[in-house]
Image (tube, one colour):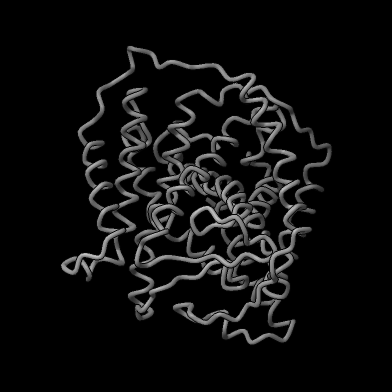
Length: 368
């Protein structure tokens, strides 16, 4: 528990304090970054640049295409054991019904539903979470929801807390903003917290379904990544994350992507100093399958987030400097890459929750 508190204090201190410290040192008006609900647009985003777009596209393709080629040439079709296959559970059908009804209500504007129109996102995601867990249960006879109910339920409040930090960091770059937001501060906090609470359960449920399908097992014996001086590397990561957080409000057009990377770097660096296993530990032995499943799970969830956002009443719009073209729904094409490190951060937070529970319920853990 002591090490957990240490990680939380360092993480929260850096995430909350450094961006404010950076804009204060730069002489910016600190108060504007603390506006709640956030309605003022004060960040001027850079226009599209083919040069920057091509650099980002090259970096993304340089590591993603080799992984895709390896998966296509090495994957094996894993069939479920007939002894473990189950019927589609009754609660899965409830999830299907809930998703279908919520989808219709989210994209229409019935007068009788107008009071609740802004709150249709949460039941949509509850429905999807139930469906994904039901598919996993049907395939293997178990799923995250039934095998680890305490862990699964705890993910909801932790998820809300988790996503509010990204909302806070976004204040310094304003890469997304919400429209049709007319709530008072307390109402805004309450009604935003509800959909935020579904983020971790959704991503980790999809990841569990992917892992149990064994389609990514070919990455269990992949390229080992050796680091000769892990603590020195961790120190460099911590410094980079700290500088990035301090600078995102000062140079939001140049280093906005560190919003997604810095939290991961901090956690990995701190866990390295504490001699704990972390999300990247399996890289040393060449086991990439959990890491890849985590990133893909966030990308899959991202597809549904962006799709359902498209015609919802309370929705968000993006403004991404230099690369805001070729939109898929509201998200510019290269912006989808942000879901990849986000998936690793979801896995990290899930692992932290798991380590708390493991002290009370034995050795059954969720792997990083």
